[in-house]
Image (cartoon, rainbow, N blue to C red):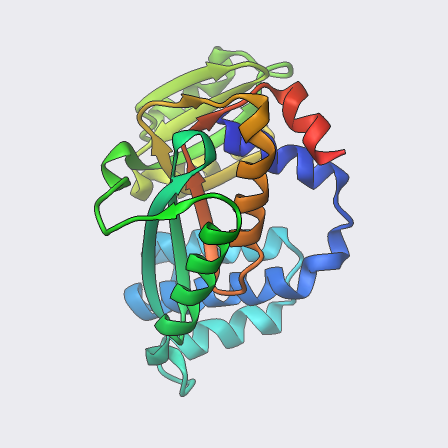
Length: 249
C-alpha cells in the first residue's frame, strides 16, 4: 500500500466519522454531478458515474442527495456547467510529488487555497506537467492480504485486472480505469470483501521520506484535503506505518 494509502487508513481509524460528513457529502455530490455531466445519467453506461454513486452510498449519502446530484449533472440543475475539473501539481517536503484534483465553480478561489497550503507547509506549487508524468491513472482495488490469497483474486483477472501487487498487509489489484467497476463487482460476487476501489493516480516510483519531513508533509496533505474544492490528493511518498501512527496520534 502506498504511503498515502497508509496515511488515509490510519486517519480513518482515528477519526470521528461524523465530524467531516457534511464536507465529504459536498465532495461526493460534486463528483457525481461531474460524472453525470460528462458521461450521462445512466450508471450502467457510465463507469465513472457508477463508481461515484458507489462511493457516495458507502459514505451513507442519502439517496435523494445522489439523485439531485445526477439531475444537476444531466442539465436539470442550473449549476452543472459552472463546475470544472482542475489539476494542480507541485512538490512537498522531502521532494515528494503531489498531484491535486479539484472540482470547483471558482478556479481563482481554489487556486489561491491550494497555493496557500503549499506556501504554509513547506511545499512548492509547480507548473502544469511538472509532476504528472510521475503517475499513471489506474483503477485499484485494495484487498486484505491477511484474509485472502492470490487465488481468491482470480475473478478480478477474468474481469480485466492486469496486475496484482502485494504490499505489506494488502493486495492491490490494478487495471485500466474503465475496468474497475467490473473488477470490483466480480470480486464481491466471489465473496471477497474489499477495502477500497478507486480510480487513482498511481505513482510509478516512491520517494522514501525521513521522519523529520513526514510530519510537515502530512500537514500539507491534510491542508489540501480540507479544501471543499479538492476531491483527491495523490502523492508518491513512502513512510513506515509506525512513523505515520506516531504523527497521527
